[in-house]
Image (cartoon, rainbow, N blue to C red):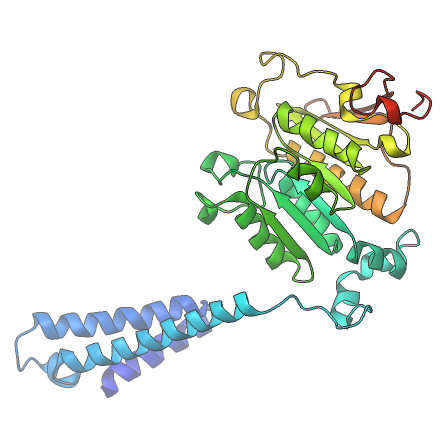
Amino acid sequence: MILVGTVCAVLWGIGWAMGAPNRQRWGMIAAVFVGVILAHLILPAGHPLRQNTGGSWELWAIIAAFVAIIWIYRLGLRRLRSRAAPPVRPADDAMSEAELERYARHIVMPEIGGAGQMRLRGAKVLVIGAGGLGAPALQYLAAAGVGTIGVVDDDTVAASNLQRQVIHRDADIGRAKVTSAARAIGELNPYVAVNSYNHRLTGESVEELIGQYDIVLDGTDNFETRYVVNAACVARAKPLVSGALSQWEGQLALFDPARSGPCYQCVFPSAPKPELAPSCAQAGVFAALPGIIGSLMAAEALKYLLGAGRPLRGQMAIYNVLDAQNRVIKTKPRADCPICGANSSDGKS
Protein backbone atom coordinates (compact mmCIF):
# COMPACT_ATOMS: atom_id res chain seq x y z
CA MET A 1 0.00 0.00 0.00
CA ILE A 2 2.94 2.31 0.68
CA LEU A 3 4.11 1.79 -2.90
CA VAL A 4 0.70 2.74 -4.34
CA GLY A 5 0.42 5.75 -2.04
CA THR A 6 3.87 6.93 -3.10
CA VAL A 7 3.01 6.58 -6.80
CA CYS A 8 -0.22 8.55 -6.31
CA ALA A 9 1.59 11.29 -4.39
CA VAL A 10 4.23 11.57 -7.12
CA LEU A 11 1.61 11.78 -9.87
CA TRP A 12 -0.31 14.44 -7.94
CA GLY A 13 2.89 16.44 -7.45
CA ILE A 14 3.81 16.21 -11.13
CA GLY A 15 0.31 17.31 -12.12
CA TRP A 16 0.50 20.25 -9.73
CA ALA A 17 3.91 21.29 -11.07
CA MET A 18 2.61 21.15 -14.65
CA GLY A 19 -0.51 23.12 -13.77
CA ALA A 20 -2.88 20.26 -14.59
CA PRO A 21 -6.44 20.77 -13.29
CA ASN A 22 -7.61 18.69 -10.33
CA ARG A 23 -9.90 16.66 -12.56
CA GLN A 24 -6.93 15.37 -14.58
CA ARG A 25 -4.90 14.63 -11.46
CA TRP A 26 -7.74 12.66 -9.92
CA GLY A 27 -8.07 10.85 -13.25
CA MET A 28 -4.44 9.73 -13.09
CA ILE A 29 -4.91 8.44 -9.54
CA ALA A 30 -8.06 6.58 -10.59
CA ALA A 31 -6.04 4.97 -13.40
CA VAL A 32 -3.51 3.77 -10.82
CA PHE A 33 -6.29 2.19 -8.74
CA VAL A 34 -7.72 0.45 -11.82
CA GLY A 35 -4.24 -0.76 -12.79
CA VAL A 36 -3.60 -2.21 -9.33
CA ILE A 37 -6.94 -4.05 -9.30
CA LEU A 38 -6.30 -5.44 -12.80
CA ALA A 39 -2.83 -6.56 -11.75
CA HIS A 40 -4.32 -8.56 -8.89
CA LEU A 41 -6.86 -10.14 -11.21
CA ILE A 42 -4.39 -10.99 -13.99
CA LEU A 43 -1.12 -11.84 -12.23
CA PRO A 44 -0.72 -15.21 -10.47
CA ALA A 45 -0.83 -15.53 -6.69
CA GLY A 46 2.49 -14.82 -5.04
CA HIS A 47 3.64 -12.40 -7.76
CA PRO A 48 5.92 -9.67 -6.26
CA LEU A 49 3.70 -6.87 -7.56
CA ARG A 50 0.68 -8.39 -5.86
CA GLN A 51 2.61 -8.90 -2.66
CA ASN A 52 3.83 -5.27 -2.67
CA THR A 53 0.35 -3.89 -3.27
CA GLY A 54 -1.59 -5.51 -0.46
CA GLY A 55 -1.80 -9.08 -1.71
CA SER A 56 -5.53 -8.90 -2.58
CA TRP A 57 -7.65 -6.95 -5.05
CA GLU A 58 -10.62 -6.89 -2.69
CA LEU A 59 -8.96 -4.33 -0.45
CA TRP A 60 -8.41 -1.91 -3.32
CA ALA A 61 -11.94 -2.46 -4.61
CA ILE A 62 -13.30 -1.50 -1.19
CA ILE A 63 -11.14 1.63 -1.08
CA ALA A 64 -12.19 2.62 -4.61
CA ALA A 65 -15.87 2.07 -3.77
CA PHE A 66 -15.54 4.14 -0.61
CA VAL A 67 -13.93 7.02 -2.53
CA ALA A 68 -16.62 6.79 -5.24
CA ILE A 69 -19.39 6.98 -2.63
CA ILE A 70 -17.86 10.10 -1.08
CA TRP A 71 -17.45 11.74 -4.51
CA ILE A 72 -21.05 10.97 -5.55
CA TYR A 73 -22.34 12.24 -2.20
CA ARG A 74 -20.46 15.53 -2.50
CA LEU A 75 -21.58 16.00 -6.10
CA GLY A 76 -25.22 15.37 -5.21
CA LEU A 77 -25.02 17.67 -2.20
CA ARG A 78 -23.54 20.45 -4.32
CA ARG A 79 -26.34 20.17 -6.88
CA LEU A 80 -29.04 20.14 -4.22
CA ARG A 81 -27.58 23.26 -2.64
CA SER A 82 -27.41 25.08 -5.96
CA ARG A 83 -31.07 24.26 -6.70
CA ALA A 84 -32.28 25.13 -3.23
CA ALA A 85 -30.36 28.40 -2.92
CA PRO A 86 -32.78 31.34 -3.47
CA PRO A 87 -31.76 34.39 -5.50
CA VAL A 88 -29.41 36.53 -3.45
CA ARG A 89 -31.59 39.57 -2.83
CA PRO A 90 -31.39 41.96 0.10
CA ALA A 91 -34.44 42.14 2.34
CA ASP A 92 -34.98 45.85 1.77
CA ASP A 93 -35.18 47.95 -1.38
CA ALA A 94 -31.50 48.90 -1.38
CA MET A 95 -29.03 47.15 -3.65
CA SER A 96 -26.51 44.92 -1.96
CA GLU A 97 -22.77 45.53 -2.19
CA ALA A 98 -22.52 42.71 -4.70
CA GLU A 99 -25.19 44.31 -6.90
CA LEU A 100 -23.53 47.72 -6.70
CA GLU A 101 -20.29 46.17 -7.90
CA ARG A 102 -22.03 44.16 -10.63
CA TYR A 103 -23.83 47.19 -12.08
CA ALA A 104 -21.09 49.75 -11.43
CA ARG A 105 -20.56 50.51 -15.14
CA HIS A 106 -24.26 51.33 -15.43
CA ILE A 107 -24.49 53.39 -12.27
CA VAL A 108 -21.69 55.77 -13.30
CA MET A 109 -23.56 56.68 -16.50
CA PRO A 110 -25.53 59.92 -16.07
CA GLU A 111 -28.48 58.58 -18.10
CA ILE A 112 -28.84 55.61 -15.73
CA GLY A 113 -27.34 56.15 -12.29
CA GLY A 114 -28.54 54.38 -9.17
CA ALA A 115 -32.17 55.38 -9.74
CA GLY A 116 -32.16 53.94 -13.25
CA GLN A 117 -30.58 50.71 -12.10
CA MET A 118 -33.23 50.38 -9.41
CA ARG A 119 -35.85 50.94 -12.12
CA LEU A 120 -34.41 48.03 -14.09
CA ARG A 121 -34.31 45.96 -10.91
CA GLY A 122 -38.04 46.44 -10.46
CA ALA A 123 -38.93 45.95 -14.15
CA LYS A 124 -40.65 42.95 -15.72
CA VAL A 125 -39.87 42.00 -19.33
CA LEU A 126 -41.53 39.23 -21.34
CA VAL A 127 -39.47 37.63 -24.11
CA ILE A 128 -41.44 35.51 -26.57
CA GLY A 129 -39.18 33.01 -28.28
CA ALA A 130 -35.93 31.66 -26.81
CA GLY A 131 -34.35 31.14 -30.21
CA GLY A 132 -31.98 33.22 -32.34
CA LEU A 133 -33.33 36.64 -31.32
CA GLY A 134 -34.48 35.69 -27.85
CA ALA A 135 -31.10 34.21 -26.88
CA PRO A 136 -29.00 37.41 -26.98
CA ALA A 137 -31.92 39.55 -25.83
CA LEU A 138 -32.37 37.38 -22.73
CA GLN A 139 -28.66 37.40 -21.97
CA TYR A 140 -28.32 41.18 -22.11
CA LEU A 141 -31.55 41.84 -20.23
CA ALA A 142 -30.33 39.55 -17.47
CA ALA A 143 -26.83 41.03 -17.48
CA ALA A 144 -28.28 44.54 -17.26
CA GLY A 145 -30.19 43.63 -14.10
CA VAL A 146 -33.84 43.44 -15.20
CA GLY A 147 -35.51 42.08 -12.07
CA THR A 148 -38.04 39.68 -13.63
CA ILE A 149 -37.80 38.07 -17.05
CA GLY A 150 -40.51 35.89 -18.57
CA VAL A 151 -39.57 33.39 -21.29
CA VAL A 152 -42.17 31.89 -23.63
CA ASP A 153 -41.33 29.02 -26.00
CA ASP A 154 -42.86 25.61 -26.71
CA ASP A 155 -39.87 24.20 -28.59
CA THR A 156 -36.92 22.03 -27.57
CA VAL A 157 -33.24 22.60 -28.30
CA ALA A 158 -31.98 20.96 -31.51
CA ALA A 159 -28.43 20.63 -32.80
CA SER A 160 -29.23 22.97 -35.70
CA ASN A 161 -30.13 25.73 -33.20
CA LEU A 162 -26.66 25.95 -31.69
CA GLN A 163 -25.15 27.73 -34.71
CA ARG A 164 -26.86 30.96 -33.62
CA GLN A 165 -28.96 30.43 -30.44
CA VAL A 166 -26.06 31.12 -28.10
CA ILE A 167 -27.96 30.81 -24.82
CA HIS A 168 -28.17 27.03 -25.30
CA ARG A 169 -25.36 24.44 -25.02
CA ASP A 170 -24.70 21.11 -26.70
CA ALA A 171 -25.73 19.40 -23.45
CA ASP A 172 -29.17 21.08 -23.76
CA ILE A 173 -30.13 19.24 -26.96
CA GLY A 174 -33.58 17.72 -26.44
CA ARG A 175 -34.31 19.94 -23.44
CA ALA A 176 -37.10 22.53 -23.43
CA LYS A 177 -35.73 25.90 -24.57
CA VAL A 178 -37.34 27.71 -21.66
CA THR A 179 -35.59 25.35 -19.24
CA SER A 180 -32.24 25.80 -20.95
CA ALA A 181 -32.66 29.59 -21.09
CA ALA A 182 -33.67 29.79 -17.42
CA ARG A 183 -30.57 27.80 -16.47
CA ALA A 184 -28.32 30.13 -18.45
CA ILE A 185 -29.90 33.27 -16.97
CA GLY A 186 -29.52 31.91 -13.45
CA GLU A 187 -25.85 31.19 -14.06
CA LEU A 188 -25.31 34.64 -15.54
CA ASN A 189 -27.12 36.68 -12.89
CA PRO A 190 -28.56 35.15 -9.68
CA TYR A 191 -30.37 38.43 -8.92
CA VAL A 192 -32.83 37.90 -11.80
CA ALA A 193 -36.11 36.02 -11.31
CA VAL A 194 -37.15 33.91 -14.32
CA ASN A 195 -40.70 32.84 -15.20
CA SER A 196 -40.81 30.02 -17.77
CA TYR A 197 -43.82 29.36 -20.01
CA ASN A 198 -43.35 26.17 -22.01
CA HIS A 199 -46.30 26.57 -24.35
CA ARG A 200 -47.45 28.41 -27.47
CA LEU A 201 -49.35 31.66 -26.98
CA THR A 202 -52.99 31.19 -27.92
CA GLY A 203 -56.41 32.32 -26.77
CA GLU A 204 -57.40 34.87 -24.18
CA SER A 205 -54.59 33.85 -21.81
CA VAL A 206 -52.17 35.85 -23.97
CA GLU A 207 -53.59 39.17 -22.81
CA GLU A 208 -53.55 38.07 -19.19
CA LEU A 209 -49.91 37.03 -19.42
CA ILE A 210 -48.77 40.16 -21.26
CA GLY A 211 -50.63 42.33 -18.76
CA GLN A 212 -48.22 41.16 -16.05
CA TYR A 213 -45.17 42.69 -17.76
CA ASP A 214 -43.92 46.20 -18.54
CA ILE A 215 -42.70 45.54 -22.08
CA VAL A 216 -42.73 42.61 -24.53
CA LEU A 217 -40.02 41.41 -26.92
CA ASP A 218 -41.20 39.24 -29.81
CA GLY A 219 -38.51 37.15 -31.49
CA THR A 220 -40.77 34.45 -32.92
CA ASP A 221 -40.44 33.14 -36.46
CA ASN A 222 -44.11 32.81 -37.45
CA PHE A 223 -46.64 35.48 -38.37
CA GLU A 224 -49.55 33.85 -36.56
CA THR A 225 -47.88 34.37 -33.19
CA ARG A 226 -46.71 37.87 -34.12
CA TYR A 227 -50.25 39.01 -34.84
CA VAL A 228 -51.60 37.41 -31.65
CA VAL A 229 -48.89 39.07 -29.56
CA ASN A 230 -49.41 42.43 -31.24
CA ALA A 231 -53.16 42.37 -30.62
CA ALA A 232 -52.64 41.50 -26.95
CA CYS A 233 -50.04 44.26 -26.51
CA VAL A 234 -52.40 46.81 -28.03
CA ALA A 235 -55.28 45.63 -25.86
CA ARG A 236 -53.15 45.96 -22.70
CA ALA A 237 -51.33 49.15 -23.85
CA LYS A 238 -47.96 47.41 -23.60
CA PRO A 239 -45.02 48.42 -25.81
CA LEU A 240 -43.79 45.72 -28.19
CA VAL A 241 -40.23 45.36 -29.49
CA SER A 242 -40.42 43.17 -32.58
CA GLY A 243 -37.51 41.68 -34.51
CA ALA A 244 -37.14 39.50 -37.59
CA LEU A 245 -34.33 37.78 -39.51
CA SER A 246 -33.64 36.32 -42.91
CA GLN A 247 -30.25 35.18 -44.22
CA TRP A 248 -28.05 38.34 -43.99
CA GLU A 249 -30.66 40.92 -43.01
CA GLY A 250 -32.54 41.74 -39.84
CA GLN A 251 -35.03 44.36 -38.72
CA LEU A 252 -36.52 45.65 -35.49
CA ALA A 253 -38.99 48.28 -34.33
CA LEU A 254 -40.79 49.48 -31.21
CA PHE A 255 -44.57 49.35 -31.63
CA ASP A 256 -46.35 51.44 -29.02
CA PRO A 257 -49.62 52.89 -30.40
CA ALA A 258 -50.81 53.83 -26.90
CA ARG A 259 -48.04 56.45 -26.88
CA SER A 260 -48.16 57.35 -30.61
CA GLY A 261 -46.95 55.43 -33.61
CA PRO A 262 -48.26 52.33 -35.35
CA CYS A 263 -48.78 48.80 -34.16
CA TYR A 264 -47.25 45.79 -35.88
CA GLN A 265 -50.33 45.18 -38.04
CA CYS A 266 -50.30 48.77 -39.27
CA VAL A 267 -46.94 48.09 -40.91
CA PHE A 268 -47.66 44.47 -41.87
CA PRO A 269 -51.43 44.34 -42.56
CA SER A 270 -51.31 40.68 -43.58
CA ALA A 271 -48.82 37.85 -43.58
CA PRO A 272 -46.79 37.54 -46.80
CA LYS A 273 -46.93 34.42 -48.91
CA PRO A 274 -44.66 31.64 -47.59
CA GLU A 275 -42.38 31.84 -50.63
CA LEU A 276 -41.79 35.56 -49.98
CA ALA A 277 -40.88 35.07 -46.31
CA PRO A 278 -39.22 31.66 -45.91
CA SER A 279 -38.27 30.46 -42.44
CA CYS A 280 -34.70 30.23 -41.16
CA ALA A 281 -34.82 26.48 -41.74
CA GLN A 282 -35.67 27.09 -45.40
CA ALA A 283 -33.56 30.14 -46.23
CA GLY A 284 -30.83 29.95 -43.57
CA VAL A 285 -29.48 32.74 -41.39
CA PHE A 286 -25.96 34.06 -40.79
CA ALA A 287 -24.75 32.99 -37.32
CA ALA A 288 -23.86 36.42 -35.94
CA LEU A 289 -26.93 38.26 -37.27
CA PRO A 290 -29.33 37.19 -34.48
CA GLY A 291 -26.77 38.42 -31.96
CA ILE A 292 -26.80 41.88 -33.54
CA ILE A 293 -30.57 42.24 -33.86
CA GLY A 294 -31.34 40.51 -30.55
CA SER A 295 -28.92 42.80 -28.72
CA LEU A 296 -30.55 45.83 -30.33
CA MET A 297 -33.95 44.54 -29.19
CA ALA A 298 -32.64 44.32 -25.63
CA ALA A 299 -31.21 47.83 -25.98
CA GLU A 300 -34.58 49.22 -27.07
CA ALA A 301 -36.31 47.56 -24.12
CA LEU A 302 -33.72 48.87 -21.66
CA LYS A 303 -33.92 52.40 -23.12
CA TYR A 304 -37.69 52.30 -22.78
CA LEU A 305 -37.53 51.16 -19.16
CA LEU A 306 -34.93 53.81 -18.33
CA GLY A 307 -36.61 56.59 -20.30
CA ALA A 308 -33.26 57.22 -21.97
CA GLY A 309 -32.53 58.34 -25.51
CA ARG A 310 -34.90 58.18 -28.46
CA PRO A 311 -36.74 54.88 -28.99
CA LEU A 312 -37.53 53.30 -32.36
CA ARG A 313 -41.18 54.33 -32.01
CA GLY A 314 -42.61 55.10 -35.44
CA GLN A 315 -39.41 53.82 -37.06
CA MET A 316 -37.96 50.54 -38.24
CA ALA A 317 -34.24 49.81 -38.30
CA ILE A 318 -32.99 47.45 -41.02
CA TYR A 319 -29.45 46.08 -40.95
CA ASN A 320 -27.73 44.11 -43.71
CA VAL A 321 -24.64 42.45 -42.26
CA LEU A 322 -23.33 41.28 -45.64
CA ASP A 323 -22.95 44.86 -46.92
CA ALA A 324 -22.57 46.44 -43.46
CA GLN A 325 -25.44 48.80 -44.27
CA ASN A 326 -27.92 50.18 -41.77
CA ARG A 327 -30.99 52.24 -42.57
CA VAL A 328 -33.96 53.52 -40.60
CA ILE A 329 -37.33 54.04 -42.24
CA LYS A 330 -40.39 55.82 -40.85
CA THR A 331 -43.59 53.94 -40.16
CA LYS A 332 -47.09 55.38 -39.70
CA PRO A 333 -50.28 54.21 -38.05
CA ARG A 334 -53.24 53.33 -40.23
CA ALA A 335 -56.66 54.71 -39.32
CA ASP A 336 -58.26 51.57 -40.77
CA CYS A 337 -56.06 49.18 -38.78
CA PRO A 338 -58.39 46.58 -37.20
CA ILE A 339 -56.16 46.34 -34.12
CA CYS A 340 -55.16 49.88 -33.18
CA GLY A 341 -57.03 52.17 -35.61
CA ALA A 342 -59.31 53.52 -32.87
CA ASN A 343 -56.30 54.21 -30.64
CA SER A 344 -54.27 56.14 -33.20
CA SER A 345 -53.77 59.72 -32.10
CA ASP A 346 -53.80 61.63 -35.33
CA GLY A 347 -52.18 59.40 -37.92
CA LYS A 348 -48.73 60.86 -37.43
CA SER A 349 -45.64 58.92 -36.40
